[in-house]
Length: 533
Ligand code: GLN
Image (cartoon, rainbow, N blue to C red; front, side, top):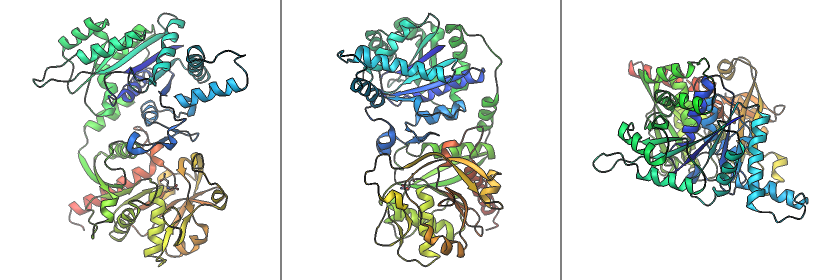
């Protein structure tokens, strides 16, 4: 078994996750079985309780584990389906250690960070890599070298390096190479962060320098000299679209350096990623999509949705232009004016901005503008339709108001539960699709598996009324107790899902609802351009 560890220095947000995912892609392209593990040094057990304002989106895995968005990059780049075991947090490790201690498994010893916590970290990594039959285990340590929280993890990595045979272990350090006022590439921050690593007993084999531009030869030389790595092992990573990164790395011969250092053979290379990027570079058309949400100021809050739209866009030959619309501002404006080719309402929680989203849905429905609703967007589409088509003026969701008619409500068993943690319906669940519907046309089958993250449901009492007015529930689960997809056959494209299709979209396999939505949006744009409407 080979191990590649990715650490980061200087500052957070350098794209360490993309670097790890891109290294994974290079190796997957070469036919290697790569098993990624993300270490998040925070104390939380998982990302489920984390606020998107602070952390970007919460990504949901197949088994329902709520994780950091980097796991989404891994799945998209490497074409994998991961589970909770691929994400280690301080909370998870300490929970294991404390449980063992309570069971008396430490036989009266004093339980300490070294060796008990570090042993637990190492055995977690090795167990997962072995169980998943990895040829290469790729480990990303979140945070920045020097953070107090990451210390036990880096210590565990240091021990692993000693325990593993020569040639089985590789450390890739990602740092920042800023430009000074005169445009010169500065290496001092890299030197300092490597020094910090060394103080912890870790020595980088490869340094990836994040920079606005390509690293100059002289910069590489300097980093190589001061940080004690070969010049070939200093890899330039200039700003570019994330999907370009694996190709840029190949231009830098990073794959060859890795194979050489890990003593692995060169295998025949797959070219599908390259073809995808080539298509992405040659997009001739454009499409303007409005995303109406609460977290629009946070770049990563709707990351998977953005990527899913990009995947569908490349598939269609269209560059997607995003307009991020603040639902709260919309709510406080007198008139809705959303002049876009398509309107998307993403998932969300709570009252704030919800009425603005409902206004946007009404606008899309009445003006026959392509609409895609996801999770909260699905639920609010039901509220909007109930109010403005079925005439239930005070229709609402019990998440927003208890006083109106709750067309969206908790199921009886969920009303019993009082606390918030762990009560969501999470992960991949089978959805049945009604033949002859738009959903059926998009998916091309009657059973699909999609990922969920919600508490509320369409209230079954109102389904006959909604359907009598033309709304079609074209997908359901749980023996029809829960509605999963809605559509309006009379509309250009009015489609919403209780689940989150964005989590299963891959560059090479765009998600069907996103594809359908974007196709319709592009058609609408062309009609408008050609003056047909
Ligand atoms: N707040 C809604 C629920 O809990 C929708 C959740 C979401 O959009 N992810 O059901």
